[in-house]
View (spheres, rainbow, N blue to C red):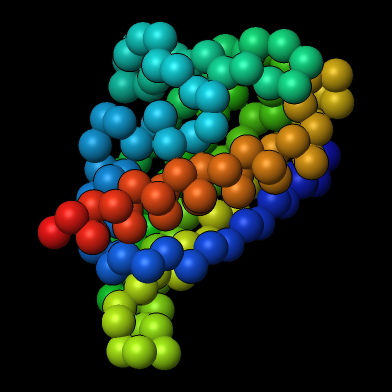
Length: 148
C-alpha cells in the first residue's frame, strides 16, 4: 500500500474543550464538515453526500464519540467512497488558556489519506475542507459558549 498523505490543520477556539467535544458527540456533528449532507445510517456507519470541486460524491463515514484523556478530548473518524481517498482522522481538542486567563481550545485535525484521484479530490481541496470543518466547529462552540 502506498504511503498515506497526511493533512494537518489547527485552530484556536474561544470555548472550553469539554463543551466543544460535546458538539462532536451528537448526530449533527457530521454537518460541521463543509457541504456534507447525511443520506442514511447503515450498519453503524453514515452514508453522506458532498459537493466536491468537480462532482458530487458519496461516502461511508464511521465516527466515534470523543474520548477523554488527561489533557484533551480525542475523536476519531474515517471515510471511504468511490473516487475518494480512504481516510482516517483524529481530532484532538486540548486545553489552551488565553492571555487573559480565559479557557480555550487548541484543535488539531490530522487526516491520513490513501488513494487520491485528482479528478475527484486533491490535497489542496481536502485541506480547505478540513479548515472549513474546524471553522464551523469553532463557530458552533463559540456561539454555544457565549449563549451560556
